Length: 231
Image (cartoon, rainbow, N blue to C red; front, side, top):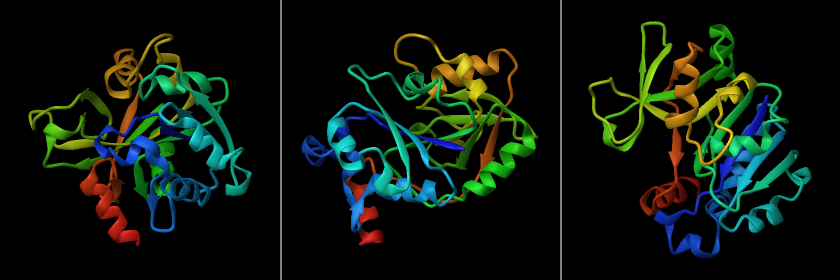
């Protein structure tokens, strides 16, 4: 597997911290968040990494370099204009030639990727989305599934419980085939653009339900919580 880490966000909810430091470089314990992410991916044998950059992106590239000091090989794309979560894949489309994990750069986790990979391989879809039960449908995308965990539809936030309570946890394991459904121009979102295009032509996407922690540090309160846990 390969790995994509989405790092282009401006971190508006974490200002003033992110005025001078990009969100992935904010310290968690004794090292930047992105170092935790790279170490986690490496523990599952994922060393080929692709990182999109925008806000203070030069600082992230300066910190990580080519990745050799982190047991990784890193390629970057610098987005002059934000391309959206799925649009970020466009720059790496020729390189994503095997299954790849997509993780957001503001997520702190030790998620069991081996179990996710086993589920993905057993279902033979072109993508698997990690989902978690939520009591805040207004705050997340809702994933609607059938009895076999095949995704029927996706409902962009804010939502309600009319389509269930499986929230998109924003961790994906995708096959290269998914790139065929990526819009060629302009910003593109996974839930609004890429995944629906695949579903509309009958391609199979599956939901992997888990209660493993995926800690989003994207707000002051959540960042402070992560600091307390990893101090």
